[in-house]
Amino acid sequence: MIIVIIYRMSTSAPSPDVAQPVLPASAKATSTPSPAPATGGMPQRLPGAGRAMFLKQLHQWHWISSAICLMAMLLFSFTGLTLNNAALIKATPEVTRLKATLPAPLLPQFKQWAEEHADAKVPLPSSIADWTNSAFPVDVRGQRAEWTEEDAYIALPRPGGDAWLRIAVDGSAEFERTDRGWISWLNDMHKGRNTGAVWSWFIDIFSVACIVFCITGFLIMKYHAANRPSTWPVIGFGIVLPAVLALLFVH
Image 1 (cartoon, helix red, strand yellow):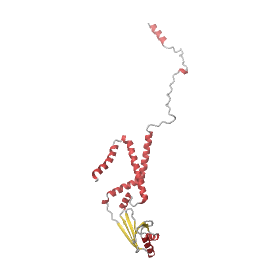
Image 2 (cartoon, one colour):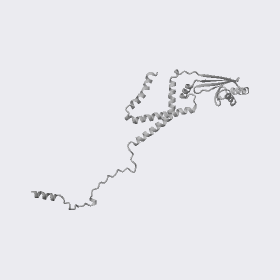
Image 3 (cartoon, one colour):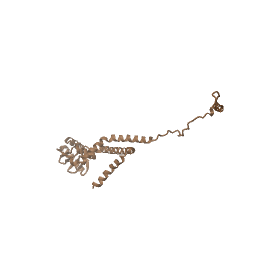
Image 4 (cartoon, helix red, strand yellow):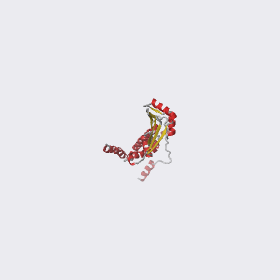
């Protein structure tokens, strides 16, 4: 039996001296990577790249609009407080009254102008306007006057006060200016009262910048709302609160 077992072991194990058959190179198994799917020559867009680009644009416009309207927003917020509490802010108007007499050489021209332009709104003649500017602290060149057969009246409203000028056909001239203080000036700037066209354009540009600031801020909060659960409750509270107050207490 021992001889049989040794014989079987010797016949089953390959001899180290016997050369093993060599397979041809074409028969060797090779592992080749599977071909990549055709993309038509176009680069693949990474997931979330569009969202990241949109968020970048939102942050950029949010920053630009905030930079434009920062100082003006502080000004309008402050004047909003002063307007809402105007009764609590005491101010004493300062009134300045001045009188003068139209020179005799200019009187005939003024009378003729008053007769020709009665019930019209036209500026003073240049010679009379030059005298008025030298007699009073005012510039009336180009200002329309309300003419009657007896006098010419010019209203001179301005932020934080007002003024008026009256010249009669007998040559007497009166000027009055009222100054209500810097709080009143800021309030009129807030309302755009008697501020001119340039300030009116600025208010329009500032309003557009505030709209962009609010919309971009809302969209940024929307994109981050998933990680901040309190976002929508706080936004809803900010919308509902003024509506409820208006419905309950404003009549």
